[in-house]
Image 1 (cartoon, rainbow over the protein chains, first blue to last red):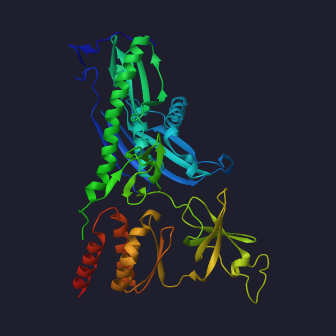
Image 2 (spheres, rainbow over the protein chains, first blue to last red):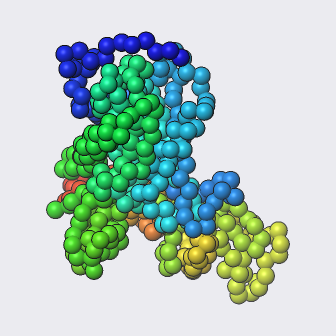
Image 3 (cartoon, each protein chain N blue to C red):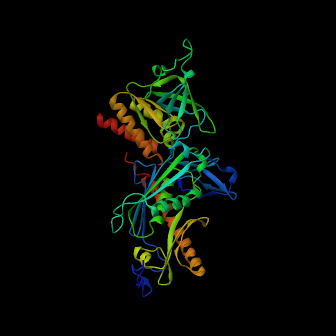
Length: 244
Length: 223
């Protein structure tokens, strides 16, 4: 697929008016689903995802059980209406890969030994997509896991950096992703600066890569604060409200 | 008064006081669960949600789901199923229950009050029965998260005592979050409504007083 060159940066600003190191607006809501053990709605610009966590619960089929720890199952799924052209429903090559890397991004923080032989199911549904859905999914899933009372060492935060018109920028949107030169999603534990997922598509020089990673780390800290605030607010809000 | 914490939150430098719901890394205590921090003798984090894991000595309300000779398989509102051995019922005059006749003692769907006898490393859970083990009749079973059971009981039983008195109901709370209520239809409605209210506001302070107000105002409204 040959990409045409288009101008993604005008007067030092990006097409949507953001600076190079600026995140899209984020909205986090905890406990949006009644039936799930933990859930989270996450908005990153025009990305809208919802994460639901069920479990720990009995693992079926039995032979997938692990006698020593819980097994994490992660499903990333895009709604047919989440993109411009209708997305054919069901798992495909891309969503299977994203499910795998996202699961592995969250796996290191979850203390699985507390619930041997069980399964923890994480479902991430993308309702609207605008580049960066896997990172939004990880952010949502991390909050939903905490809300489900799953023992964890930390929260995981995730963001992508990319390269457009030769500049390293934070958090690509769909246009920048399609016409840019590179995209690098990162997931990390902000508090300890531990990277749990790192992917790259396109070409980055070593210098660009290092700069990108630094940008991602700063952004992850910001996202972490928002995730944390969302969780805290859920309970401070209802204190004293209690309709008597 | 209540401090809500999130996994990974730094709690203290005193690693020797680390308790439930926390972990120690580099000699410091961090929160392992999303919940309320309790900093009395031990530093604990009391989770606000999560699944019940049976431990020895717990009193639970179970539901028979299957008969698999010589065991009854019991659902105890947990990721792990429990089992109850035939011999628990074959005591006294009748020494042995014949194969195929276990359902005459307990059949699927029956509710029992049982004590957790043992939990092994493979999370096989064995139950033992108390004298009055069968529950049923004109009662109601409600289920809340096991994390909220202490709030429903209240400090040294204050909340449950008040509930029983003001609702005029028999209320039995099991460790696994199942609650058995017995009384007249209206009283059961009120009691279950209040229990759910406590579960919803378990993290707030001054709950006992609020519940008392609620019950009094309800009584007044009904006259």
